[in-house]
Length: 134
Image 1: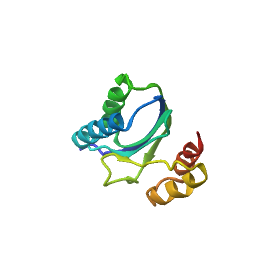
Image 2: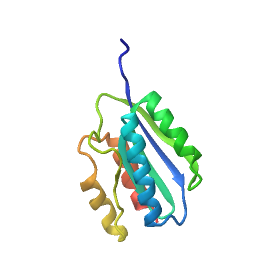
Image 3: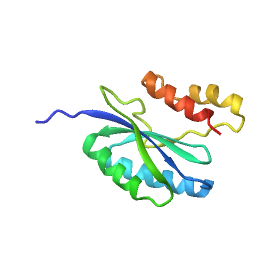
């Protein structure tokens, strides 16, 4: 019996001008695909870029990443983190969309309060920095 190895991928991509209805459609597809593949995570969109954290086994994450890279709604998909973890930071989130506050000054504090407590500190830092972008 092979031992499963959990990984976390974090990627960023460019997607200018995506409306709320498209984000809702993306989230719905993510949740459906992620349930099928036992992938969890979170999604942020700042009006120009997506940042997504995905958690699962390598084979499942690779399958999900192929779907993401083929999606014409965004481009320039770049994995910025790929780490092995002993447990999921988002075990109950098939894909949670965390909205970024409109007011730049409020973004970091609001987002920090919504992120999982056991999220790796370097991933937390990347996510909080992403939220500071306009």
